[in-house]
Image 1 (spheres, rainbow, N blue to C red):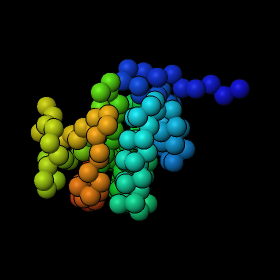
Image 2 (image 1 turned 30 degrees about the vertical axis):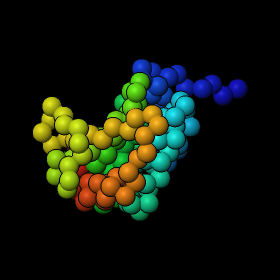
Image 3 (image 1 turned 90 degrees about the vertical axis):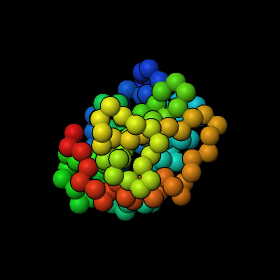
Image 4 (image 1 turned 90 degrees about the horizontal axis):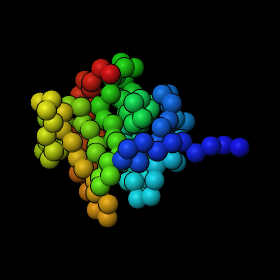
Length: 139
């Protein structure tokens, strides 16, 4: 019998840390309700925009790294909250235009996707492509 992952605050699945496609797929499969569709769309856009993208689940969030970056460097992650999915661009202040939400860390910028909101896929894919070409964040 396979048990469903525990959902943490904001509906984030508690998935063990892991690298590769399998833990990210497990995370996406366990996301609740509308967040699952958003998570799957983000994952698909990243995979298309960055062929060979590296994937992992760390701290109960999917992480994405450029294929040629060091294995501990990441350019994007996302995490669910009650009313939105927060996409973190670790070097987002360097993107043109920068994602709209600021962080207490000057380099980090966020994009929020709310329930019922359409993701601007063209803009998002452009941010992903730009972010994948930056050094990323060592985490």
